[in-house]
Amino acid sequence: MILEIRDITKYFNGFCALKNVGLGVEENTLHAIIGPNGAGKTTLFSLISGMYDVSEGQIAFRKKPINGLRPHQRAELGISRTFQIVRLFGQMSVLENVMLGSHCKIRTGLLRTLFRISLRELEEEKTTRENAMRWLEFVGIAHKADQIA
View 1 (cartoon, rainbow, N blue to C red):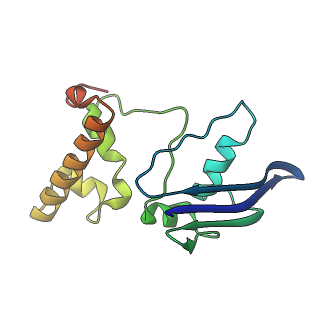
View 2 (cartoon, rainbow, N blue to C red; view 1 turned 30 degrees about the horizontal axis):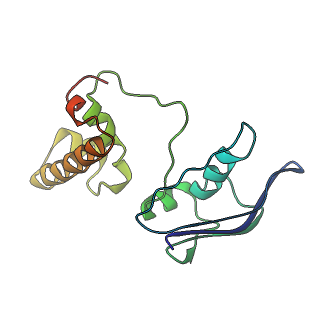
């Protein structure tokens, strides 16, 4: 199990937004969280990503508890989230916008990678570009990679 949520509860000023929620996600599977407005979907993702702290219960990633880890620490593990309102960099291509999503995985620094200062940055930029293209292919929009977003 790559992600395991056990009996998590979240209170906001005495209001219970989630109560005793459990979820198990196996690696290499696809899941959807569906529910009406106010059901707690966004709160659940905010708890998983570390935007909010869990009031009760446990979240484990690859069998290790992650309660208490800040969002940037979870991002280093590979856990992140997107928001419902996506803001694109309008002067950049679709591919470049997707590449920006890898910023927490880039060892040499985002700006150094984008400006390709050394051989290491060139290699990292190539890998980042290839990974971004795979995601564009996965969602069926690789043909739009070079279009302005």
